Length: 198
Ligand SMILES: [Zn+2]
Image 1: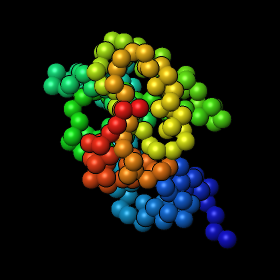
Image 2 (image 1 turned 135 degrees about the vertical axis):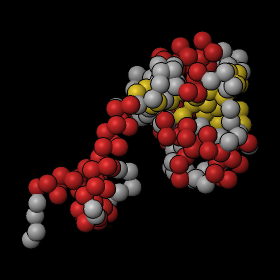
Image 3 (image 1 turned 30 degrees about the horizontal axis):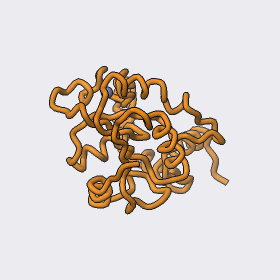
């Protein structure tokens, strides 16, 4: 049986991407090896440069090239609206929808005590500090519909219940357990415009 430690290592790294199984990782690895070497060298250089350039924004925790990030520092964003998401990548999806022009906050994880993700892991203290600083009129919970998403929505609602801030969540239509990124932009736009108070 064919075996190479270097190739195994490459396949294992590629298989860590979400949605990439071992077979796909093997195909990608062989693809990289079969191309002109400059393709792989450029790719690894681009990954290194980009990863080094990005760090969390100290206000919203989005991974960005500047701190504060371009969204927090923009004077054109509506500061009465704060959208809470799980990942920085969710912001890109919401921005692509071109429907929302407020600010964001990135939790980093959803609440899941059984997996070791408690209030500290979802950056709840930074969230509270950001909310008391901004005093938004509406907080939109754009979290994926799952039991962890529900637990997180409940937790944030508990924190804010007496604050007088309108708390909304996306309407159904997003598949349960599905990530925001897997929904089409039309589905997301519809869930967004039909958002309702928690
Ligand atoms: Zn920011």
